[in-house]
Length: 162
Image (cartoon, rainbow, N blue to C red; front, side, top):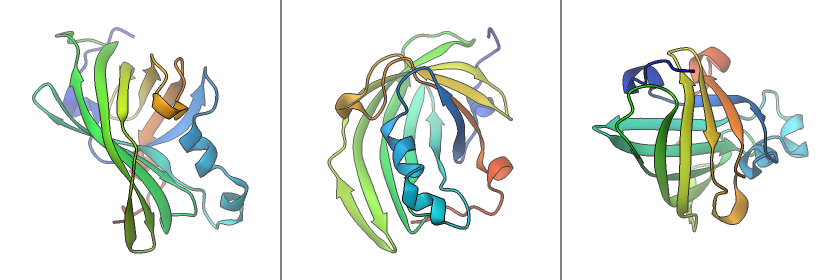
């Protein structure tokens, strides 16, 4: 897309995945779109939050299974792999843990492993990401393309749980 990459334009807060294509539907998306979720008054939310510091930062992957009352997370660190100032911009990712939250109870999940993220396009209103490698345990396959919008545009009443 050859647009400047600016961490401030990449956005803070949760960005909700509104479209995926390319690879097999990721496991987190299949969970969020399960049959049980169709009985909920509003759709489950699934997305990511990136928090930048210097050349990298922290990522939190988030997927609701039965609304915010039952959701999973996987989080870790990421860092730029080069000094590119334009998109596409590549990052290595290292997931170091996860949780399952049921009501107010949070339990640790043994999720960990490397990943690789390419930011194809980013603006304050939309971002397009792709996975260049398959994640351990096949949560995502190589070739996945995800389009994300800020949560306040998609689900303005959504409130971050625990």
